[in-house]
Length: 247
Image (cartoon, rainbow, N blue to C red):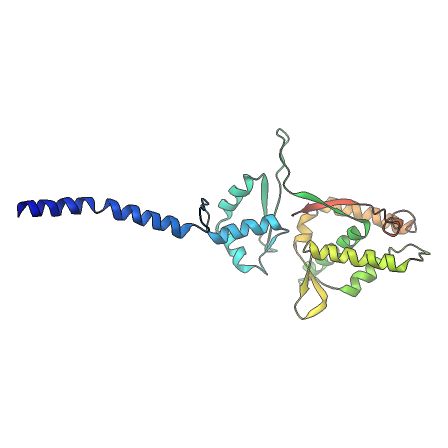
């Protein structure tokens, strides 16, 4: 009987080790997002990082769940991005967050984000959209623009005496499509020809760069569109390196 009691005590002493190991394995399995996953971040936090890398931004107004996760796990997200030489930029007022390359003079940093090369017409459109965004923010409104408004603004830059109107129209439409591809324009539900200008546009392009481009294009208009406006029509588009492009 004593033997039986001792055996029982020995069994009880051994029991905690085995279930504990099994419990730990179960926790690891539950935390894994995919088979063999060695990541430590929660699924939703990873989704935020992926969206930031895909770009151009996390939009808190349209992506409320991602925005909430971003604010909750900001420190961990910054840490992961720093490992990729990327800086997290957050504008809490606009509810927008995006990444940009870190700057360091003493080391050579590998570049993950590419600069977006914009043609002359694309740059003209970006300036127009950015100005519309600033005006709307000042008035406390959403920045909304129609397809026709964009076409009419771009038409100002058509070369005097141009005979290839079809080619110019194609350049204008291409500029709008590029803005849509970069998510600077977001279609308004139920309105095929109306778009909201993304708040990221104001943050991605430095004010001094915008001012320089504005002065250049104003000068082009005053000189009668003699040189730069020929580019899109002759297939020799002038490219402006403006902002970071996520691909």
